[in-house]
Length: 423
Ligand SMILES: [Zn+2]
Image (cartoon, rainbow, N blue to C red; front, top):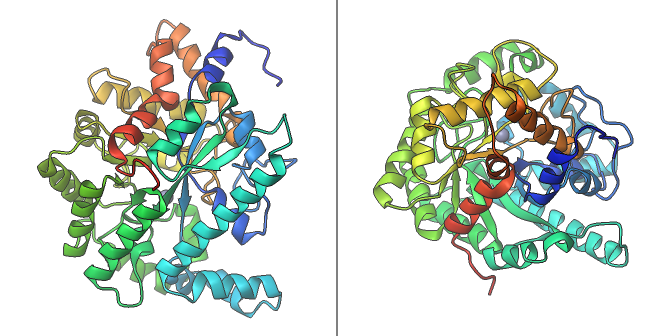
């Protein structure tokens, strides 16, 4: 490693459990037929879709111990709205045809299951290949809390643990699209080992209403008529549907982490109300967001919500994408991430026990130039450690840094995830 500054922060980074609560290794692996086993020789700092930022070697280099790996079934209106994607249907390559058949044509629930299968196959293949290697850290799926604890207990020799999550409540929707089917599919995914569900994504789904999804620079890709129709469909005053309320209620009973990222402020309020009434804690998370006070987008959490989540034992993952963190253009992101974390601390009355990392790497995001992939995560620790040394900024103790890097996220998995053993 090329870091040659004061090594204290690097020791701390490697000693700490590092958890990323939102990234998409499966997405690009499938779409671009990429192997997760090899690391990209060159990672571009800008939005470059084929770059793989969470390959196994990148995760290992960044000291990542646990990854909440998000599965996303492409939303059908997305393909309808972006003409560039529609063209793919007519591309003669057999693998593009296969992708279309597997990812676009079947009902969402079938696509989500296929993507989970695909990732599990990749993890098993890697386990066979890396078994004899002393340099490669193993990567394993944890289908339950017991399995996760078993891995963490191995200390320095522990494998990197993948934990399944789903992005978008549409992933629960099958051919019937009824409440019974949707709640049944939720239970199926819980039993499969899915620990978290992001309720919304880009388009309104059976569970409720999302905020407007696209960063401004994507808008020219959309035909104006489609764009205006989408803008009309997004109603910030709408929250969860009755089906959405049933799903959230069932999640509190099963013990599944309820991710409010992409929800409208009204839908988030509905979640807080249902979970508040359930009396359960450590269930509500916002896996990849910023702070409304720093960037007033309805996507971001307001201060009262930050306090609510902190008071109810949840965590908030800071997204590694400037567009959502700050209302101005900048290429470097460590400043914005550190400022957002400092705000989360302040809004919750000084505690660092509700902050996490939610990089959204490989989710077709535009990562900061100074934090381009998982291997560069030690830079975040270096940066927060420097805040600790600076008289004018927020001071983080080593304990605070361990909280942020992963201890909080692990606490939420331990307290919130109801699937204890895989039997
Ligand atoms: Zn997302």
